Length: 123
Image 1 (cartoon, rainbow, N blue to C red):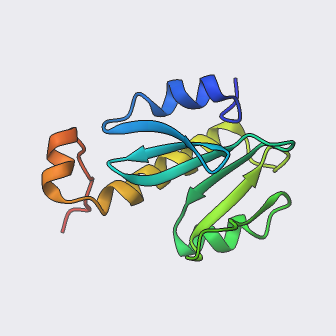
Image 2 (cartoon, rainbow, N blue to C red):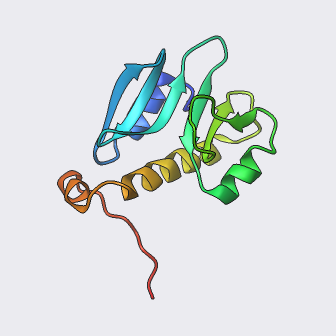
């Protein structure tokens, strides 16, 4: 079972609060609210596009099969090929982190409506 498989992608991400799926840009797109957090490209080579932190961006783009995502103007989006060296567990971590980063940008009202709790560090 791989996140590059649409059924697995839908099953795993569909369990998270506020997630819905749309088909656009010749891809399968996961959104929280109306904001994109993951894109599963369904072309000749499978690709997964996610948002990440600046630090993760630097680390990930140094790996074979991972690059800055095309068509995403901001630097913190990566395109991960199915031939990348990441293990399935790592892929799931980065997709979940993308969800959290994007969900944090939703209004408090929307997060409450969806039942999304953002973990904030204790002071």
